Image (cartoon, rainbow, N blue to C red; front, side):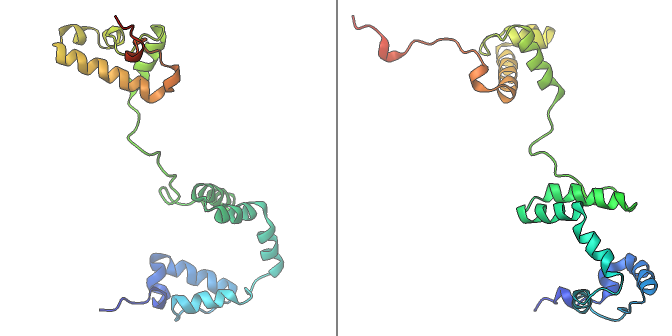
Length: 185
């Protein structure tokens, strides 16, 4: 079954609840687009708009519109959203909540315990992450009561929390003997 052409949708259906407001605005501007499809409507916008052309020229030269064009050229959706939000707010027509939602940071939100572990690691003068000193300081009684598997989990949790936030070259590592440098006896 062939799909319908989305541009052939009647304007009342396309604009939905906003269509009466649009009709009212068109009446103020003496435009008549009531019974056309979306493609016909878009073609009428190609014609010179029937309001003050100087106003549109001024609008095209306004710095936020220029910044919008630059963001579109760079394909920077976040910058485009921010400038569009600025323009709409300046025109006293801010969008409803969620319309221009900023993109969320990738991954799960950071847990408070992660920041606490890193702060404790710095407070303890950056001990080796393979040792129990950090886990003992963070988990206290739970660490002392845990069995060896539980203690290993806590040590590993602390190690991973620090490794996620601190660059690898800033984390002290114990010196290990290189197998190739052993003296031959």
